[in-house]
Length: 262
Ligand SMILES: O=C(CO)[C@H](O)[C@H](O)COP(=O)(O)O
Image (cartoon, rainbow, N blue to C red):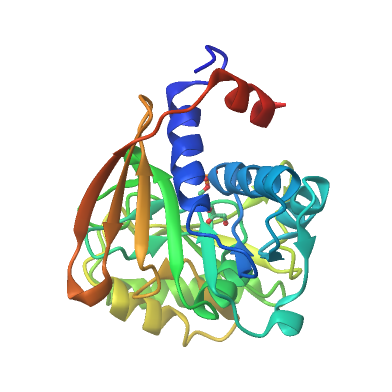
């Protein structure tokens, strides 16, 4: 492995590389957003260019769409695809039941729609994303800009009755200005520290007028592929009601890392 990739990037790369092997000729593939998902898009692009893999990609953000086109993946909208064989995406946290917090990159709405419209969702992550209980990572809520301060107050009041440790809510910024999602909405980050009942919280916050969607992915993810800096990958598969672990020693050449890092 080249020395210019940090251990965390190597971990992200091997998780992405392993997950790319789930993709077969003819599949419609949901393409996630974020730094780990970007490795996946590059790995798939390489298979398209070098092996003639024929896939159609449905990106979950304008960033991912641009990268997919750049590496030669044919891109289509979800409306054209309607249903997908697989979605592969990163996550900010995953727990033992493979429930997730997503949206660190602000793409949670499209990510949730695309993952839910897929036969299978595979998450790729490094081991630092593993948690006992969700909530250490601030939970993103996508909210419409109209009346967002009122929506924020309603969220704060709602949190008083919820099983959470922290209740601070902050508007995500992009420098001096509020952050805008691809859908033209804002993100409110909920600093909860610990979420006692993620399923309940997800249902309750989505009832608040102005909230479009939240970053909790409950019962959506099927497999988590966990990468390690030394090239090992573990797969946790929740299908058939149990979490199974497998290990795979990923052997990779310096050249592939170098190519993908370009
Ligand atoms: O949910 C996401 C974007 O909305 C990302 O998948 C998540 O933030 C993980 O990103 P990274 O792979 O860069 O750590």
